[in-house]
Image (cartoon, rainbow, N blue to C red):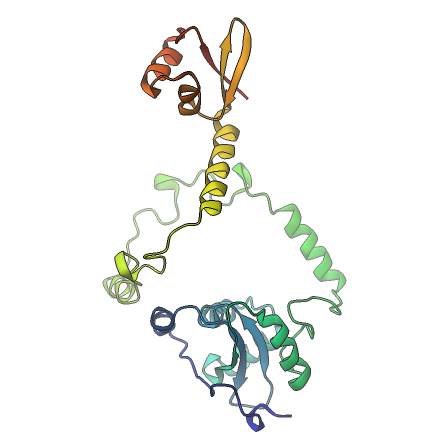
Length: 267
C-alpha cells in the first residue's frame, strides 16, 4: 500500500523546516505524541518513526541531516543528493500520552515497509549487521568517550588560548538569534504553573546530597572520639545537635568544639 492511498487519522500535516516555526507550533499545541512519516517529492520512498514530541523529533531529524550525521544512511544519502527541500513531514496518527507510540509505529512499518528505515523493528537494532569497519570505529569511540582533563579537545583553551577569543557575532547573526529566541520566562515557560511531585523533589534532594558527598566528602560529628552522626552537609549536622549553621561552621573553621561535638570532613 502506498502512503497516498491511505486515509490518515486527523489528516496530513506538513511542518515547515524552520526551527522557529516548529517551536511556535509546540508552544501553541504543546507536546504531541504520534507516528510520523518523512516523504519526498522525488520518489515514493519514505521513513516512518514515532515520538512523544513529533515537532521536536522533526527538528532533530533536520539538524542531523544538515550535519550529515543522520542514523539512517539511506535518508542521509538522499538528502545529500536531492537536498532537504525535497523532504516533507506528516503526522500519520496522533496517540494519547498514555499510549506507547512504538506499538503504532510498528504497525505502520509492517504496512508500508519504508525504504529509508534501517531498522524494520520500532526502536530496535535487531537484524542490523555491522561491518568490521563500523565495529572498530565504535570501539575506538568507546575508548575516547572519556573526555575529562587533557582528553578534552578544549583542555587548556581558556582566555586568549580559546579559538573564539576576540571574535564577535555579526549584527545580522545577532538579529537572527534574537528573532529565533524562544521566550521561556513567566507564562512562556513550558513548566509554568506545574508543581514538582513530592517523589521527584525527594529524588532531586537525594541526588544533590550524593553529589555533595562525592565532591566535598561527608561531614561527621565526633563525640568522645566516636562518630555519632554522618551527614552530607554541615546543615544536616547542625540540625542533629540543634544549633545554627553559622555556629557549626564557625566551630568547623576554627577547629573548636560545638556543644561538645567536633565536626570533621571525611571522604
